[in-house]
Length: 80
Image 1: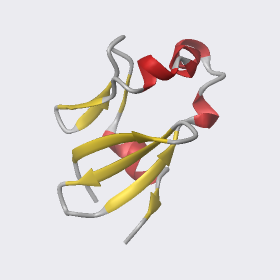
Image 2: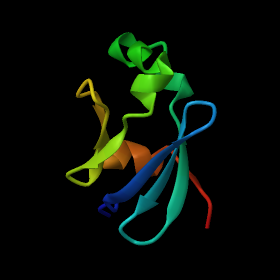
Image 3: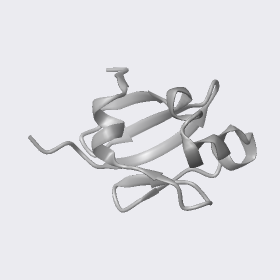
């Protein structure tokens, strides 16, 4: 099974992301478990965290840090 691409991303409280996938499904991804892992610690900066955007069906921050759409889909919680 191929996981869907991300269509929209919006940062929300507590280092989480509100994701909308190409299927219309909405999910919440908690970035907190990543914040103590190497370069991901830079995302503790709220201004940097807020720069998240969709790039090629996945997401990326202004510092070019990214997460794959597979990770985002498989480790997020459905809102639908």
